[in-house]
Length: 125
Image (tube, rainbow, N blue to C red; front, side, top):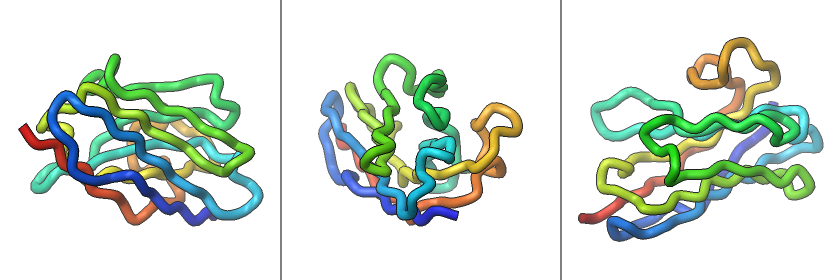
């Protein structure tokens, strides 16, 4: 398994932008599909975005489509989540996750093997 550490969270005003990073340990990062999820207080963890090993296939949740993008740099063992036009409802703890194998659609938490500790993103109105 890989160890994941997120960074880049914080407080941002509505309409602003923020970029999250997730650094993976180990030499096998390029073997993992990567995803971003978020969890707001009192709500279930929800899918935000995923990117396949090679970066060739990307999925974005409808709730953030057109505002968020996911990318990865396998040479730096890092996956990114660029968030633009942020809204108060984007406030949540954001988690990155790694999946060694692709079973369904990479949109459910159970498909992932490793998780980061999460980073808080707060969007003020």
